[in-house]
Image 1 (cartoon, rainbow, N blue to C red):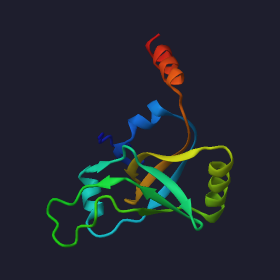
Image 2: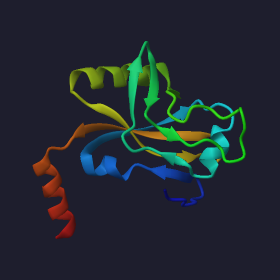
Image 3: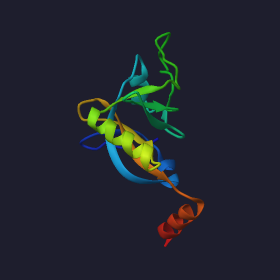
Length: 145
């Protein structure tokens, strides 16, 4: 969890494992539908993106296995931490992603969650292709050299 403040956005969480396990071919920004006290929990930085992914179903994109912890001062308004959350994208972008994920064997991985300058929670999605073991070793070698 990193809390870096830039003039544009405030990063809440970064998925560093995604850069280790995948080749990121394309990045795009999506809004996220949150309920109740999830926004307050996000502002506290209590989110885990590890092992999470996005999928396209019925012309909509959903974020799976993203753990947003219950708000510490919340009560019955707290939501299920592992619930499936809807992502907001334009229809053209969704159709483009649907074609790429079905044909080329690419997956949608959330890279980071942040708040925009206007205060909206955003998710940066990456169109990713899985690395093999020898690819990971090669990237470690080039990084250390």
